[in-house]
Image 1 (cartoon, one colour):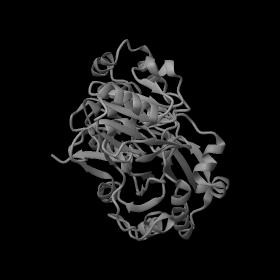
Image 2 (cartoon, one colour; image 1 turned 180 degrees about the vertical axis):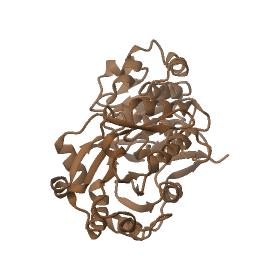
Image 3 (cartoon, rainbow, N blue to C red; image 1 turned 30 degrees about the vertical axis):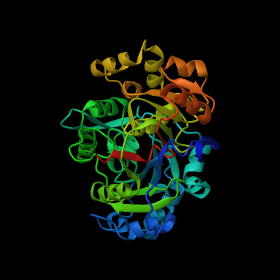
Image 4 (cartoon, rainbow, N blue to C red; image 1 turned 135 degrees about the vertical axis):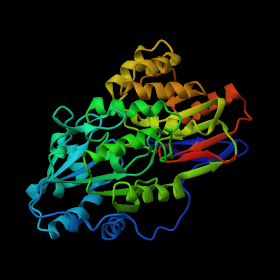
Length: 416
């Protein structure tokens, strides 16, 4: 069977013999009554756990709308107009609104990137800024000791509206909800402390209850309240197929339930070979983001198997500490030992890759230099087909193959 795999803005075709193909993990089919801006409008009109946004906001208040950065697939230009319409109905002035891009530990945007994220009209009428982790306000501490150090413009606002898309997160359970604040507009020290819980066995994709990372980041909101969220679920083509609005926990949890209905995929057995892609740009812009697909794929491969990771990574590693750890490590095992004794943000993703390497080899189809790929313990290939041929050579031509074309969104769950 010929299967299309997206890498960056391009497509590659891989031919897998029918006898070898275990399956293709795509979203479950469900009826979608409302999509795009209509789904957002419905959510705004029917908030969960809070009054309507226009009944929360008061005229004259300083409002921040926190939205995702360029590495996330959230279509802010679709979500924002409905929110701004409600604010206008409350006679909120444009000059009292600021859109803040939640960078977390990511790089700053160019003006063109900001314009692309929110659309020309919004960019020209509403102030848009990047979160600044160096200019922050200390608002408290969680029980874990995580400092709630928040970008000043967010900390000092009268009202905070948080946007996000909900997908599986490899140690916070799910993205979305309170993650717009922690780590979205938090300091590196704060993010580092929160993420240090990732080594806990309960900090896994698809788990919210008793997940220490999620519990800690939601506790941060006791110090930096969120007034309203709008979160969306996207399909493989990054179209909005569902939206929730309202309370940062209650609405978020309903969104997570919807996500599970579509993207939680039961598998009957572990595969010898898993082909996984983030689904193309912008989610595979760098290795820091592409790693998410790799982490989901580890749930589908047998010990001693091979994961063929597909991601453009045209911007390289995407994070300095992540790159430094990978380049400096003498072997992958040393990364796991290091994270236990010296937790550093960025290093945590290097260690996560090392944990996958404990279970399986990683063949990497990307735009990164082959020698560089080899130096970080993966095997480089120019195409998915060549990587698969090599995997068959190593594991045998009876090997079973599972394909995850949208690996960052799809969570394999072994049914046994």
